[in-house]
Image 1 (cartoon, rainbow, N blue to C red):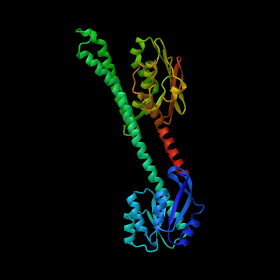
Image 2 (image 1 turned 90 degrees about the vertical axis):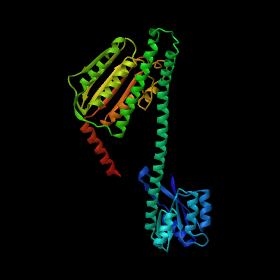
Image 3 (image 1 turned 60 degrees about the vertical axis):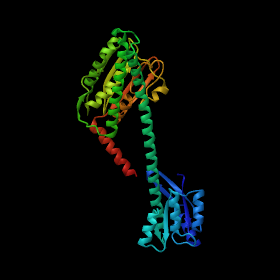
Image 4 (image 1 turned 120 degrees about the vertical axis):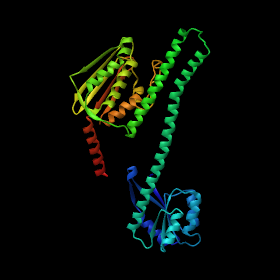
Length: 391
């Protein structure tokens, strides 16, 4: 909103000119959008002219005299109600009664100002209407954004589930029709591929549940002193069989226990995602190095691999929901596209962040920083207090 457009409809020329003078140079602060706007004021001398002007260019606020020759203010309100107008109407009246107020409100009037009024009273009611109008429009924008996000989410989720389901379905048709013959051994690979696809969908569902619980704040969190090096060691042990089969060396560097007050399950999610990705996107015979360091007040986790790497453009997209790098090197690698988005959200819960540095065909390094739970929450509270004091 560059300027607040106000239309004054009153059959008294003196009243119109007085309103124009009172609003000249007015600026309105809109805290909901963190902006200050000026006003543009136009005038008409009758209800009929007001409706004609509204049809051509609707204002943001209509200052409407209740008693005019020809169409009254209430007649104009009735007509506007049938049009479904979205601007706000403020009634100007010298005959304010309960009955007229109720009738006008039923017809969509936002507020009243009684004659005679001072310039300050007029400016006050305009500011109130502008703030309400902005909040109303912001609510509509958020509702529309929510609908769009929900549509995009369902569309992407449908795509992510459709692909593995189609593969499973095709393999099952192959089994049903005995396409590879009657010997069970001939179907070992299709069965393994079905299991792999099913596991991928199970991982997607688990990641979705983790993401939903984290974003909604409904997940029960238990804070305790946890050795980050121990969790890193357990994450490496989980991927050790796969790494060994591909000749990938695993190493952990930590100067003794590195204790962090956190929710153990959230820390496991972070390390399991980073370490499993480091193996999954590595080359055979490669290496994964995990380092856990204290850098007060942070704990720093660094996971470095010698894998296929990424371009700068690919790296910039990594932490968005459902983003997976798709190219010839990753075509056979499965994933939900949610793991790194979850890592970033968890890092944010601990007042930290996650960064990536990658070179194609050379490897990738992820660095996560986390503050102890109590300190991160205190910083968040301090930031909120700072913001409220500045408003």
